[in-house]
Structures are given as C-alpha cells and as structure tokens.
Length: 213
Image 1 (cartoon, one colour):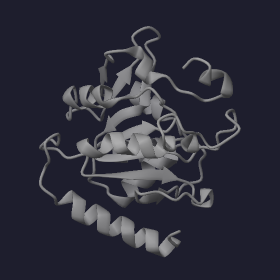
Image 2 (cartoon, one colour; image 1 turned 120 degrees about the vertical axis):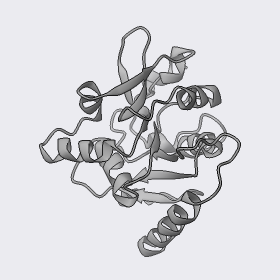
Image 3 (spheres, rainbow, N blue to C red; image 1 turned 90 degrees about the vertical axis):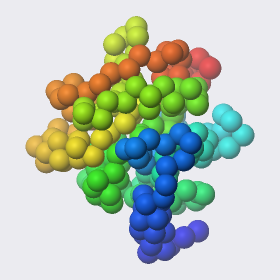
Image 4 (tube, one colour; image 1 turned 180 degrees about the vertical axis):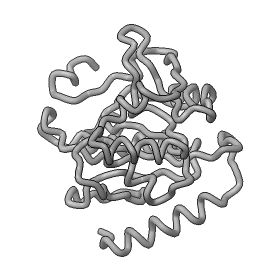
C-alpha cells in the first residue's frame, strides 16, 4: 500500500501528465477528469459500498473503469482512514464534512481548473451509454450538467459534470455552512439531462435496495 506522501506524489504526477495528453477518441476539446466518490461511511449498507462486487470487481473500480475512456485520468475520492488500495490514484477528503461536498472540494483543491465527471460509488446499473449521453449533452456554459430523474424530477449532483467555474461557488456555499451539492445545483445555472433509462440512476444504499436489482 502506498504511503500518504507516495500517493500525493502519484496524484501530482498523474494530474500534470494526463492533463497535457492529447485527446483520445471519446475526449472533447474541454477535457474531463473522472472522480468516483467513495468516502461515505455506508452506515445504512453496513459495509463499504465501494467494495461491493456487482461486476466481478469492487464497485468503485468498476465505475472508474467505465469513466476511463472518457477522461484524461480517473481518481478515487475517499477518506484516508479507509486504507483503500486501488489501481487509480486517490484523493483524500480534506474538509470537515461528511457530505459529498467534501470529495468535490478536495478534488477541486488538487486541480482548480479541472472539469470533473463525478459518479457516486453506489450506482451498480450505470453503464457506458449513460456516461456517454451525459457527456454528449454537456453544456459547459452552465456550472454543471447533471442527470434528472424523469419521474421524480430529482436532480442528481453525484451523476454530473462539474465545470471548473463551479469551484468558487461550491466553496462559497461550504464556507456559509451549506454543504449540500444538490442545493448548489438547485440555486444556480445547471443543465439537466434526462437519462435514456431511469434505472441507471438507481442508488443502492442499503441491503433492501439491493433487492431492487
């Protein structure tokens, strides 16, 4: 397992080298970094949701693999005390918060000019088409492009592209004590996308939710 200093060096090298690489087949003129949010405490599930295996490997690794063809580089967001080992570089939570805002802000603090394609780790039905559709419908003039559930109209801040311009807005909300990324999207210019199939938005947060699969 890499030490904290080794991981920080790995992170710095990865961000510098991959940000300057030429775009691949799926990459756009405005490049994306991938971020798998995996730092939650998984209290309702009773076990680390990122470690659950739905697709022959831990879920966080499966989602990172899905993002890889679309991104300059993919990172795993987590708490340092989780002692995660991964094929992908880690970004440790740096803020005093148990909300996903911690992972978002920690990622932006590492690369303030990056545009982040973010997925929560508890999306076992997310697939290649779901990711590609979100990217193809991206509106970089908005602070974010996010999926919206077609039935409930729920905005999904953790299945979204957060543009670099969102960083100061997120930081301002956090400093004022507002730690919900959902609120940031509700109160600012965001581009909403309807998924080709609502099932890809399914969050599996508890053992009962797994019964819906």
